[in-house]
Length: 264
Ligand code: ATR
Image 1: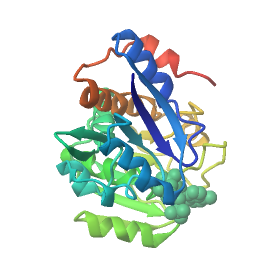
Image 2: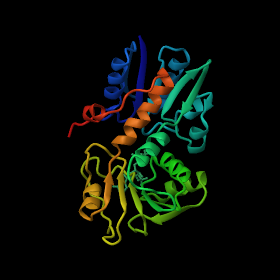
Image 3: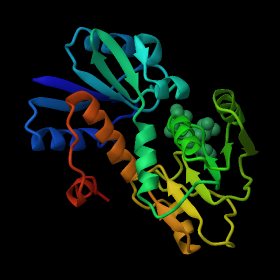
């Protein structure tokens, strides 16, 4: 039986095993997907197991999306540009790093009735998933991307990776059509203390967090009458793209898929 994993730290919260095992069963694939918590120094050996095909492939989550790169043979263009790998495959003797977060975010936004082309986007946070979001937004031809992060240096590192990013001091707000919470604030019901604008219409409040399904950030957006969306669709479609890379089958996504992931 082939074995797949998601590696991260922490990893308890990950719903990837639930989703992948559901799809494996649905498609009669003889394989099993588990989560495993690793420390930095364990990454290299873990990845060697894929090279030796003791493990068929893995997903990578925070904080290892960049850490894994030196141990891989090749990167997809998207993984290269974002310096972020969330899926590892073994192709013709090579370990290949892919980034399916980009396609996950892209699909999530396209499924919303909200056109981001020519719009101003403000991203709160500069953690693991932000390079993928920036990559996807640039492909959607947004007008402007501003990053605001508590630790300014991390926003500056992103500016080195992408052209034309604006940086805003944490605690301030600028005009936006779409605002994205990519911080971990809200995972444990923390509140983002910002003075969100209550004017204008047609704004989108997007939260990468999907558990809890409605963070205080999204509640505020809703109360102000704006469109809101959590990160569940992105999560499902990044998993779908990984599943396609490993099994060459497109799994089904329907209301049952989303129900499977409901637990709050
Ligand atoms: P990582 O930074 O390891 O990639 P992440 O969960 O992807 O982890 O990112 C956490 C994000 O939430 C970061 O942007 C972090 O800001 P810092 O770069 O300053 O650490 C942000 N964050 C976490 N706690 C925060 C807080 N109390 N206030 C503001 N931002 C916070």
